[in-house]
Length: 444
Image 1 (spheres, rainbow, N blue to C red):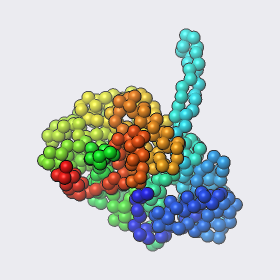
Image 2: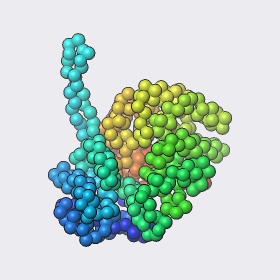
Image 3: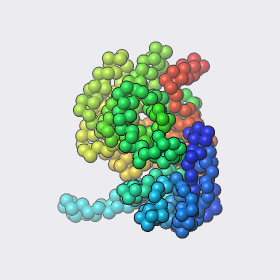
Image 4: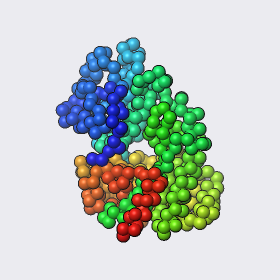
């Protein structure tokens, strides 16, 4: 598996243990950590063993697998809260929950009170689960834990990229090798620095990850991404940066910066007679900005670029409570000739509702299913179902998060025609991206 490999010794300061009741699970967790250069200090098999270890040894992270037959991982936040309240611990370790990702059908019976016949209608909902627990339930439990001062991250099994980002986020908030890093949270320190980075461009990098036709390996698109290198903390994970940007109300500014760099790439490629769409992430809040579609189209027209080359990728970072207004905004964008993609399809009921009620040109399969496709038949069934759904709705489909070369032919057999991920190409700086595409075009 190709992972977002950490810098050597990057996580040496972190003290990590695993919580697993059986040897196979413990080996699985240790294997995921070893890919990032981490050897767990120990594996504990019960909550009482967690208590005994924490009483004698400082720990920064506890990684545990959520499983239907074992509730220890779910009870862990309560245990840590109790240990802090009785004075056993002053600094609590972060908890990483992982588990098999599945998409399960749930039958919901709804009273249709307005019906003349007062019929009971049966609807089938698809709910995402991690380790047999609905993601919505896990997220609610995690929110309560965070409110109690216990940091919890929900990871998808097999997702090395998420594990890397989560560990780096812990490094920012917990690892304290020197006095300069001693702070309550990274968030409280970073607000002014985020504002400065977005307004001056200091430390920001804009990179492009190609999207490939899986059978021919022809480049058919790309996604524009942002990276921030902090002067003291190094590379900041998107999982830390994006929530900060949204909280500060700077999502439109960030979108504009990424769009600007995407248009620069499109202009350079146009001179080489290469035209591929480039996707830019945008939250519902950004898309619902007044006159968003008009300004977007005017900018493309001024640059001499067709609107079909810019793809707007809707994320769930900031949900839009007014679905009717979101529908109007998306329709206006598509009417201008822009393509609209639904990002991370399958991450929860919200994406299901969006796809059912709104119009899109494309949807992207959430990387957690892609990463699990070889290990679990449930992931293969989910992807097959998504492929069939895309065909019924006449939508293009992109499989994201392809980290292992061996998954590519399997994904193609399941019906995925286009994909992106580290197994195909890593995100590239604009000059490297342009050179990559131009050299491939000349070799055809």
